[in-house]
Length: 269
Image (cartoon, rainbow, N blue to C red; front, side):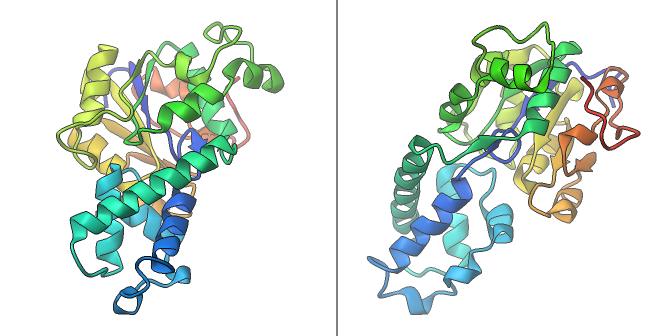
């Protein structure tokens, strides 16, 4: 671990925002299997109940759109031209996702907002690093100043009218990198834009591929097990696994340590 952490790099979906990505992937595949792909449905292992949160976390979460589509179709043994079917699936998912976002079918995780305010107040620079090209739609819609007011948080880094998007010192979300997660390209780019060495960077991730990317880049990683998948994050070699970011000792970060708070209800305000 470094002498002190200087930068925090945040995935968006599943870390900061409870987004409808999983729902969009699941329901768009159902729509295809019940319409244009109905002729090949019985040659696959897909069933509506087979697309579980665990399948999403293990096969798709954290990956670029096309990689996620290919992984899901391979998992369900969908026959035919994999790239062509993946492109159709990814396009269907994106259209559904935009509809869900426009309908307001998402919310921010309060523990994550408390955490990002606390770490930035402690002196860390922060970056957003999501594979999703929709990340900014979520981040722009979340008012951090309103949240801080409701929570009774007095913060020198939260300004009036502050959105979560504008709170970041860098944002590499949705960029086309040569390699997506689990490769570290995105996180290394985020650290570079923050002006922070990889070894002084802390990545916040909820997906196995994201934790693997952080470790491949020589960074520390906190895995957030929001989907009852702590074992998956441990196997990916997360340095600390929590179910809520309220559990993380923010003060310890200044000493280069990853630790849990003594009391589960501490929130570091």
